[in-house]
Image (cartoon, rainbow, N blue to C red; front, side, top):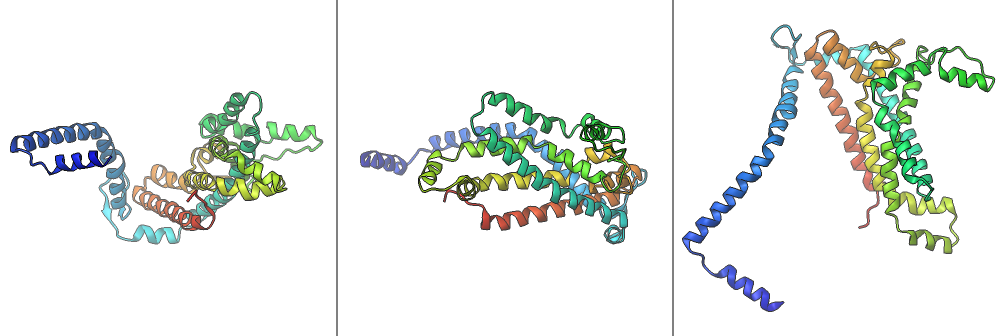
Length: 318
């Protein structure tokens, strides 16, 4: 090994001719051009689809822009309007309730089912496919329409209650007290993606830890609290961040279930739905852009808080 290292050092110290250096620079330049060529579609997409519109919306956030006239600079007027906009405050409250209730419930259900599937049941592939299906369909317009029918006054949910002797003609979607809860149930139902991620994480925990805990007399609850949760905490953190970001951007369910109104009585008026109403319903694109940047700041703040708090409960191998 030492001889090989000495030979390599001698080769590095050996002076190269001008022709060799020129050829090497030419090869490196050709390789760089090929790399930039492969990156070009991504760079075009970054500038044209992501970065460009973001900078444009940042400018429009400080303007009065109706899509029909040129933007007019108004400074901080849109921010002042947001401070006094009661419907915006309502949409924020609805969104926060939706996120803080649905995300924990969804992750708990996903983890419970992942642990059940981790026991090596027969037909595992079928179960994984069936449980993942709601995640594929839950954000679609068709499922939102079906959900509206199921929770109507004569829908399937009331019929199921009637089987158990509970006769109800409540329109769960049309009642302000239950409308938001029905959309939360729809979000919890789409547990498939985090469940598969949890299942993959559970498969990575060495079985010898559980065997050693059993020898020491640890029961199932203690093994779950002392082994499963700590070793699964990076996966829990990953799912938590993704689901919070996705939940703040939820739009389709509230739009379809409420016919785009956010009703009844603004009980399902999510922040994204109100942003849509302002931007594409009332053509207040400047105000909608300011709302979009507010949403970005909220999501960024919660993501940063999660990362700051993760050092107290997320455990890695090192």
